[in-house]
Image (cartoon, rainbow, N blue to C red):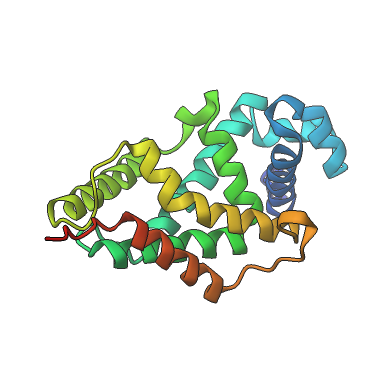
Length: 209
């Protein structure tokens, strides 16, 4: 009797797959969707274009899967330790902490998630998680309004006032400089100082008699 050997199937190379993913994220952030291509990605990874198609059907499939991956990780991070029942100041502080921690730990992923979310590929992101996130934030804001902790305002105004300052600080940090080329490093102390000013500006003013 001769031993029977089963055919060996070529498996996915997880290290190579991780390289492709990380390189794709970096290219999307640096070059944008318009400048991104499978040929450029293969060249940057020093692999053949054919190898890319082991992992993805085409460019659209790659971006959709990437968007679903980084978008899900981002939303999970934003909701970590957060509850719609939190008082307004406590909840916004938790949001600032979650957003800054994710951005500082995974800056390219955070930027990539925003690029894809605000593109035609935005629909690829996990709709269930996105709905959970939107519902949680909507309930949080409505609870704050009902308790008299927040003035009603358009969602665009709310986002700009609440999160605009934080993302400006994080952008300065990623650049390494702020206005006039001044050296800049993001710190928790500066974040909390800025947050207090934002929260004070959003708190309904007490009527003077």
